[in-house]
Length: 308
Image (cartoon, rainbow, N blue to C red; front, side):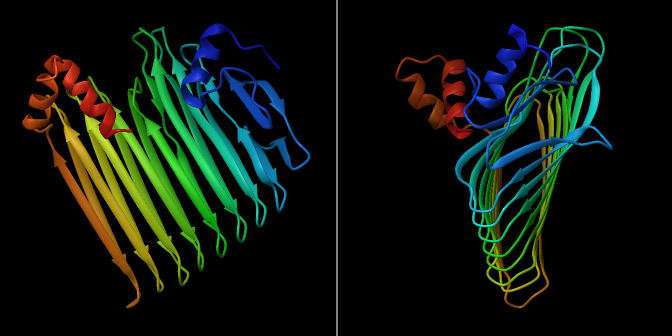
């Protein structure tokens, strides 16, 4: 194990809201090396032997426990792919906090591709938080390409908070989910791009069991010359319900492409989609500026509230 330096500690604060070593299970990864690990009586973390990554095994009935698995990169030129598998036991109720922070002050690109698979047991509840953050003044890019696969058993519940609001030059996020009867998934995505950043976000959610449901809400802001694409598909394969909502603010010379799709393969599938792309309303700016804010300050207030 290696000790975290000040830059790496700052990155962990940004992506995991950790100011000290957390209580419970955790696995810290820094510059492709293990930087700290702790397990509990109910949560075990095991290094893979065939490839880079870990297995996180949560015993059935585990409640009010958490797992933190942040990844930080503070050296230019590192490129890695990590495979993490989560096995969440039946009737458990846990919080999992992941994410990656890259500080690149060099001339070479730094890249982290995290492939996460979740096997959520019957009746289990999971809150999953994944934050991405980039910093550094080097010419090298900060690249993040997460893949998330979720397989949910009967009557399970998963809430996902996916956040990227600063410093990532390019990201290609893929999320795939399969839900059995009575399973429910809730997704909140928040994204902001600026300068010439690129962000691709793809969701493919299959509602396979009666009573399954999915609620996916994406909010994004594209500034400067940045580009965003949201490709979101919910498939109703049973007596299920699905709702998706895509709300975006476009600024400067940004580009946003929303590609919503609903696929009903059952007469009892109820699927709804909402989408809106637009600029900041002038009356919102006028109201805040009448309170003494500059136009730039008013824009920031509106954006912060929108992405909250």
